Image (cartoon, rainbow, N blue to C red; front, top):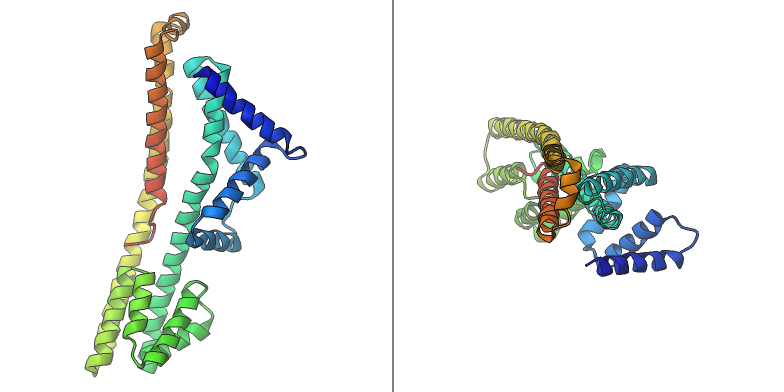
Length: 297
């Protein structure tokens, strides 16, 4: 096992020596970024570009802070567990490797929040435009020309308008938008417009007002859920960090010398490795839950 760990470190050092002039993290980050950009789905590349445009992406300094915090915490914890420089280095490198993934989760959350805000603007303003134009397509054109929407929602609204004129009906355009943005507020609003358009409702004002109230209630629920998630996230990280420090309780109970004797036993090391891996999985799963599908009711 130790031979394998030394081999991994040797490969990393040799690879780094062929990239003189770059610091270690920049070399690592560029390598991971190049590999991911090659195999990443187009959707994520578009998300990444949009978050950069909005100024949400981490700066090099913020990346460095993440590396120092996560790598430093991993180094301290694993050294307290094993009192081994080699194992500490390996766990620290592995922890730093998760920085791009954590940023990926954060990027998805921020993009999801941005999309939800755009959808909220879309639904609210289409209803407002319809009260004046009494035409769904004209309402879309009014929202398109208002300058309040941004891509990708603006691009898809333009596509809806084009499809409506090409097909002579709004059915296909609505199906297209519902599939692209599967929000309840979108589907409910579009269903209402289908009924108004096909059934020729004489007075749609009351129905549109009720729809606006439903959208407000949905938005309020999503923002409340977002605040609840933030509260849960803080408590979750505190609890997860505390789990790693249980080894200090063991050392206080048994004494440091007795603990070092216990480390000489293979099954004790196995149990300690299992504790770290399980706790890390627990934390990563929690991070994934916190960052996924924010804004989707």
